[in-house]
Image 1: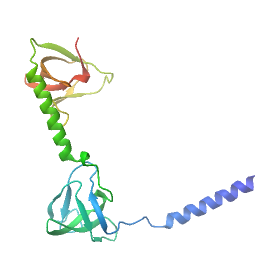
Image 2 (image 1 turned 60 degrees about the vertical axis):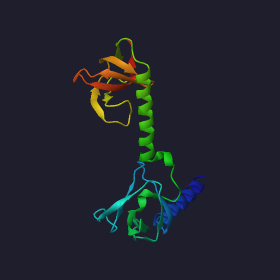
Image 3 (image 1 turned 180 degrees about the vertical axis):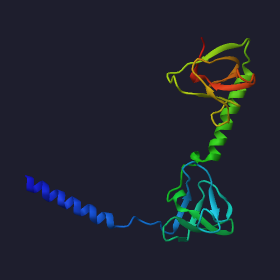
Length: 197
């Protein structure tokens, strides 16, 4: 039994050595799609370098014909909007990405959601204000007050703690319009972290 295990381990070590010497598949010319992981657009440059002169942004999901790849496989040459240049291969995919993952689609979705919240608040005005308290299981976490009822908007404050009380002046489906205790300004906080005391 010991001999069988020893032979197996020796064979496994030999195979690992062989595969370690095989180079990884390098990127090849062909059809690719812009697929930045953050859903953003891709920088198009005059030379294959992050220091290369910036030409323009290529939108997420755009199909590109890569005609040449640098020796290290990091950059691909292509033509876009009648200009020749280079893009980083790590931001390309051989399959078309999900369009809903693009920053443009997310911004559109955020805008629609925000407008729906504002419409709900306008159509259903409060007869009187009431108070809510930030109450979650995460006792050490900090939460945000935002400038508009949407997660994609900038935070007005990012230091809201459990137990902080706010006066609600309007409410939507998922958000409260409140008065910021520090500045006295109108702000928005997501309902799911609040309770009515």
